[in-house]
Amino acid sequence: MARQTSDAKREIFSSRFAFVAAAIGMAVGTGNIWRFPRDVGAGGGGVFIIAVVLANLVWAIPLLMAESLLGSRSRLGTIGAFRAFMGRKFAWMGGFMAVVTVGILFYYTVICGWAIRYFVYAVSGKFSSGVGRKQTQQLWDDFVGNPAQTLLFHVVAALLVGFVVLRGLKGGLEKVLNITVPMLFVVLVLLAIRAMTLTGSDEGLRYLFVPDWSKMLDGEMWLGAFVQMAFSTGAGWGLYLTYSVYMRKKEDFALNSGIVVAGNHLASMLAGIAVICTVFAVQSPQYAEEAVAAGDQGLMFVYLAALFGQIPGGTWFFGPLFFLVLVLAGLSSLIAMMELAVRNVIDLGVKRKKAVVAIVLLTLVGGVPSALDLDVLTNQDNVWGVGLLISGLFAAIAMMRFGLERARRALDLTSDFKVGAWWKVLIGLFPLMFAVVFGWFMYLSITDSSQTWYDPFQTFSIGTMVLQWTVLFVVMLLLNNLFARKTSRSSLTTDGDEQASPTHQGEAV
Amino acid sequence: MDAETVIWTLILFGGTVLAVVWLGYVAWRKERESTADGNGAEPSAE
Image 1 (cartoon, each protein chain N blue to C red):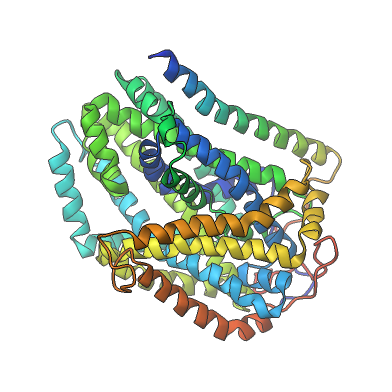
Image 2 (spheres, one colour):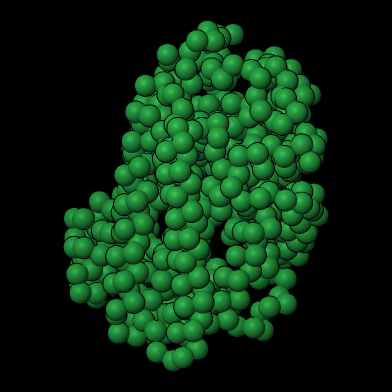
């Protein structure tokens, strides 16, 4: 195993802004742009937003703080962090978390490729005034039906992100994210202002923000809110853990987590205004209902794309901006996913350069099935999306094994906001929240008449999820000893601070 | 735009903007204080 000497210096974020910008970039993804507006509409407008805020407070913030402690105190990726906090028998949990996120990395690269393709379409004036829904539908069908195109843009996305991650924290991630994340917010604000100033946009605002109180006691609405929050904030993915590896020592866990969650929520709200107000203002409420029911890609690439030609400045300015937002949001999340994979490989004793090349090649190959077949992509989205809930549970269990009071004291030590008993209660309750959300998911899958729930070869069945998770569990358990040996570090001190050299294995000095 | 829409937009969207601005301000102030105390920065690899 390649170890660096103790005089080597570790890479850390140069400022709190850099860390927070990277973390917000990690959290804000395509889901904020195309899933949140649809979920809000289906979930009863303001009621859904209130439920998401609550979910952020009881689930996302405590879990992000836990991830932050895992990463910043172990100074290792997910595998090493679980090894350090839980002992050598539990390194496989970090491996499970890593592979679930890598499973997402594979198909998410394909999605980012779509966004890049549509940005190119928009810049080349494809969405002009004569283009309607039939033409955009045809364009979408032609694009996803052309393997050369989907594969080409999958490769473009993977190489772009690989290049950034190859350059390391300071030279790559920080430089790029310090620019792209603020740019993402500036463009979102521009788009929201444009949408709100269109005649008829007030119907969109009503649809988004006025609560439909009849949904308040609807279990599916609450499930939707928790799932939206879990996917959107990145809590439990291991991504925040990975960025926390590069956190300065005296960093504020509570405040940073709060800013990341609030920033992510703001991005969702701005995207919701931009998308829904545009659809309501330019078309009839019936078209709007159809659009939000058309699925994530249908809303963005078919229904919304058909409207740009009808908005003043839409073809050459606002259309490209919409897809630019999608590209920026997608790539900033993709960077975090690739860094998570690379960090773990580095911890296993491989140099960054080799680790990046290996992960990019793996991503190129792993994404091919999703690039060629939308059903595979949907299946992977479902399997690893729900798998993230399990990853989140592992993070909570790691805190419990480490000791909730011990972890709380470690968090409180450098937090400006008091980390009190509330954090222990929420992490302690996490398995219960997990059981409710996960159980509800399983119940919905079993009662879905369009699928045979136990059939492992159906897109949304429990069978396909359990089969793929089981394979992963078995492989990770078999690799546990190897993981434990390679990521071995000295034990943590009482307050959770690290005793080990902060040097990263494999990092160029 | 009707009053109900304005009120709920202000509460839910305006509230989010306020939360981000407030948290951002607190973070900026703490960062400035810690930098002044010499505790803000750590040596980096570069």
